[in-house]
Image (cartoon, rainbow, N blue to C red; front, side, top):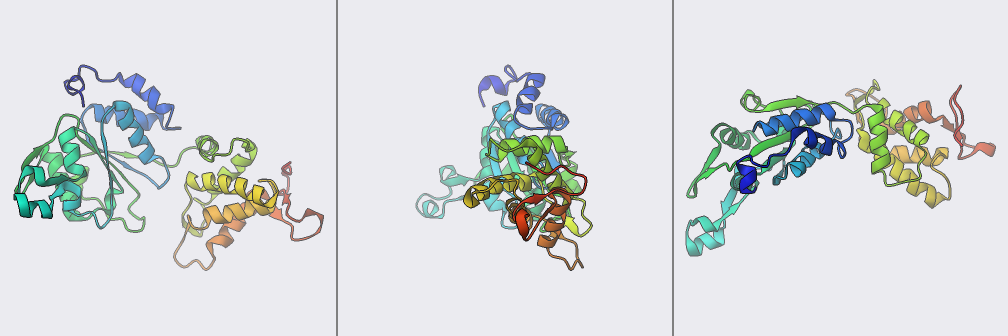
Amino acid sequence: MSESAANGASRPVPSELVESIGSTVVGRRREIELVVAALIADRHVVIEGPPGTGKSTLLRTVAHELGVGFEFVEGNAELTPARLVGHFDPARVMAEGYDADVFVDGPLASALRDGSLLYVEEINRVPEETLNVLITVMSEGELHVPRLGRLAAAPGFRLVAAMNPFDAIGTARISGAVYDRVCRLAVDYQTATDERQITLRESGSVDLDPDWVAKVVELVRLTRTHGDLRVGSSVRGAIDMCAVASSLAAVRGSSVVAGDVSLDAALVALSGRVRLREGTTRSTEDIVRELWKSVFGKVDDGGSNEGKEIAPTGATPAR
């Protein structure tokens, strides 16, 4: 961070910052405003919400627009304090001893020195021992490393983190000590309109019919409310379905609106993303087929309509 940024002489105008971030992050105006306000106020931030709701995109974009560094950490059970903070190079220690130049910075040490944002993805997968290190840094604004000494946080250092809901596989409850030191923002799935816009932008196919894409998004959103599913698909499922359908149509010399193309693309894109409720005897493929038929119709197995989309009752067939 430059000296002028550090002393606040060239801080970005918050309203302009929000507008700039909003041009990249779809449908998150309120969330953008809250994250920007918290970071400008030098607060630490945790965003909690389902997978695929743009948490990482929002935080990365905010960091970019603020003009600050961004140290990424993937939260998992293997994230030890040494991997987070850093370590002494064993080979150089043998030759030079425990000198400061021998210490290899981890992402936390780098963020502290540079005044960067430390982004911890899926913080509720991080072991408690490692979380305690983060709690100390948030409380004291510094870290004491054995044989290295004190690492003070440079101006601009903040922890920003994202997490999935507690009931996601592999997650644990975050302690009250963490929540007491952060500003928490809960997010949910974007609106259908926002998800259609995201899908059209991210699928990589410029010639997709917006009405067909709207059906894809509708199908994906239905997975989140189906009684046999514990976890539905995020908008990533819609993006993948559109991309796969476009490629599959080219492979088969067909069209994305053809029933066999659309259905197979849905099965490939969604069956691995959804999670069944305990005790359910159906397969994910069976449920995806059911939902696909409710949105797109059915595929006739024979006759002149083979491989063609058949519209549901009262709907207009796709052309």
